Image 1 (cartoon, protein in one colour):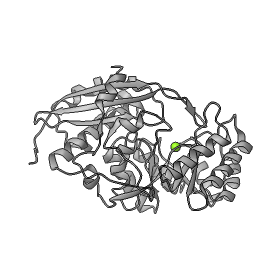
Image 2 (cartoon, rainbow, N blue to C red; image 1 turned 90 degrees about the vertical axis):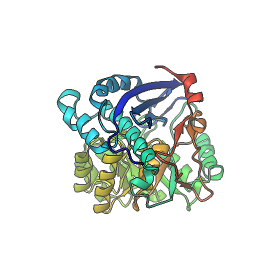
Image 3 (cartoon, helix red, strand yellow; image 1 turned 135 degrees about the horizontal axis):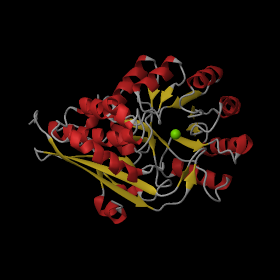
Image 4 (cartoon, rainbow, N blue to C red; image 1 turned 180 degrees about the vertical axis):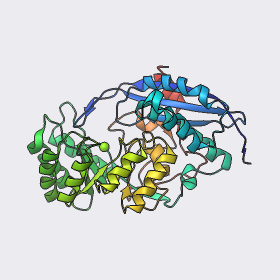
Length: 377
Ligand SMILES: [Mg+2]
C-alpha cells in the first residue's frame, strides 16, 4: 500500500570511527575509517536509512550531525516521498544560509538516500528499479593502488594480483600524482600494473586533482603507451578549460565528477567536452534525484557514468541506466571493516561483475552490531 500522505516525524544522525592502516593519494592522506548514518522516521512506521563514508576517503563526518540538527526542523512534517522537493528546499533554498555546496550537501545526500529507502520500502521496490533498473549486473573496477608507508612496486604488484586472481576483477585502478613520487616513479608503477594484470584487464589511473594542465598533459602522453582506460581527476574540478584541452589532446578517456555537487558543474563540464566518463557520487551531489539528472545529461552528451564511492549506495544508480559503465568497488584492502559493515555482502562474480540485489529500498543495511563498537555520537 502506498502511503501518499506520510510524514517525517524524526531524523537522527550517528557517527562511527575506527582505526585502519594509513593510505594516501596524490592530494589527501586518509587516516581513520568513518561512517555517518542518517535515519528518517515516519508516522507510518516505515523508516529509511542513508549514510556517508564507508570508503577510503577521510571526511570530518562528525560535523554532519550539526547539519542534520539544522535540517531537522525543516524536515519534520514533510512527506519523505517528495525526495526532489526536499533536495530543493534543503539545498538551493538554503544557499544564502549554508552556502552553495559542501558538507551540507553531503549531509543532504544522506537524507535523500534515506527518503529513497523509505520510498522503496513503501512501494516494495528497489531504488535501482525505481531509478530505471536497466542492468541487473554491472562491471566493477577495484579502487586501489594507493600510496602507503613502505609500499613499493612489489607490494603494489601483490595487491593487483590479489584483485585479479582472488577478487576476479577485470578492471583495476591505481593512484598517480603524489608530488613525492613524481612522474618517473608513477610511470614505473603504471608499467608494473599493466604487466601484472595483463592486456585483458582494464587499467585506470586517478590523480585526485593533484596535477596542473602542463603536468597532466605530460602524464597523458606517457600513459597512452600502457593502454590506460581512463585518466581520472587529473585537474582541479573547476578548471573546465583545462579539462577541455586535456581531453582534446589525448586518446585516453578523461573521467571526473566524484567531487561534483551541482547540475551546473556537470553541465559546464559536458558543454566544454571535458570528460568522457562522469564519476557522479550519490553521497556528494546530493542523492539519487540529482545524480539521475546528471546521468540523463551524460546520456544526452554520449558520455557514460561510473559512480564513485560507497558501492552499496552507488550500485542502484550505476546499474539503473544503460550507460552505467562501471561500478567503483572498494575492497577490504582500503578498509578492513568493509567486508563486515554492510548486508548483504557485495562480492564480484567470476567475470568481474556484481549482481544488483532485488530488495525493497536501497537494498543494503548497516551491520549495527559491528558499527556500535565504534560509535562516536
Ligand atoms: Mg577518484
